[in-house]
Amino acid sequence: MASSVQKTLTTSPNRFRHIQLLNAKLAKRLAKSGILTGDDAANATVELMRVTVRTLSPERVIEMFNEVRGRGQLEKMWQKLKTPTVTITARGVLTLSGMWQGAWAASKSESRSSKTKARKRIAPSSLMTLYNNSTIAKSMWLRDM
Image 1 (cartoon, one colour):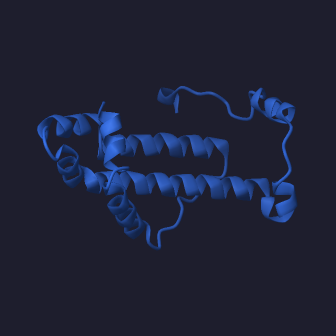
Image 2: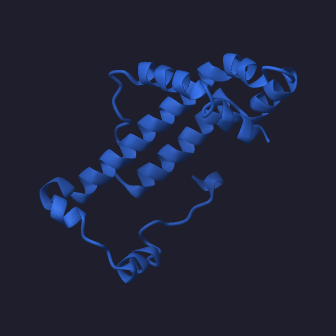
């Protein structure tokens, strides 16, 4: 339930305020750097999860949900949770953009891509070959990372 409330906080009338605050927080910020391998991406994801929970834990959202019940609940929650919500969203944006930049650089796509190639359909069998290759995206337990 708290997850749906958190989602509602950023999708109802507050979505415009959320985007404005997010844009302001991201102004002139660069993507997270150093994400050049799958291992880097996995570690960046785990670190993002750690700092997200420290910044705005699910328990905090539930506490706020219970604290401000009744008329205007979402607005009251937004007022109390908007700063950490924008902070964790910005971190996610910067981490994801760093992953995309790293993947682009690692693939050397700048020198190999074109609009024509980008529009080409990839055969499902080619994707399955990649998907079934256990060395491409090795599974690991979070506690072991």
